[in-house]
Image (cartoon, rainbow, N blue to C red; front, side):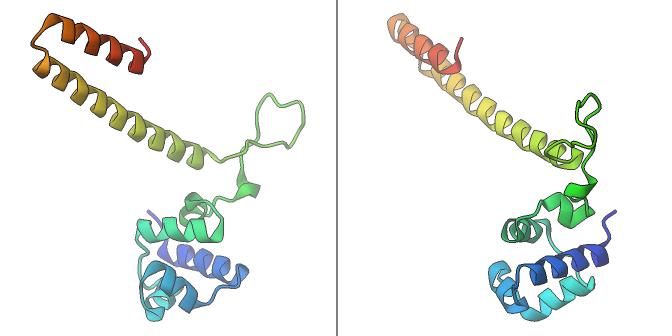
Amino acid sequence: MKNIAEIGKRVKNQRKKGKFTQQDIAELLEVSVRTIANYEKGDTDIPSTKLKLLSKQFNVSYIYLVDGISPKDRIEEPNNSEPGESFPITIGELIELYKNEINRLKEELKKLNNEIRQFKKECGDKEGCLIKNIKIKNEVGV
């Protein structure tokens, strides 16, 4: 369960670090200055869509804003020849990247399935089917 007070503190710290006013952030998120103050005090939960915008504005990861995992918390590579060298991303960020890639691949698969259904539906003559079949196989890389 995320701690909204801690998230609010991180947002406030990043806002100040970036020299942004509450007004600047309110305009970015299209909310009132009062809402920003409530976010920072931990009185109001910040929607994930707003947190993603903030992470981009502050140039920090979404995971950092939500969980407080920062570069200094990164895990060490087990078989690294240089002690103390760390992975370029945290486990949480890696999981988020994989989830995004899985969603992208699902969308691509959905498009291909739609093309196959359309192909089967339109395939009336064998010569036309053969040409479309070759085109689809080339696009898919078969």
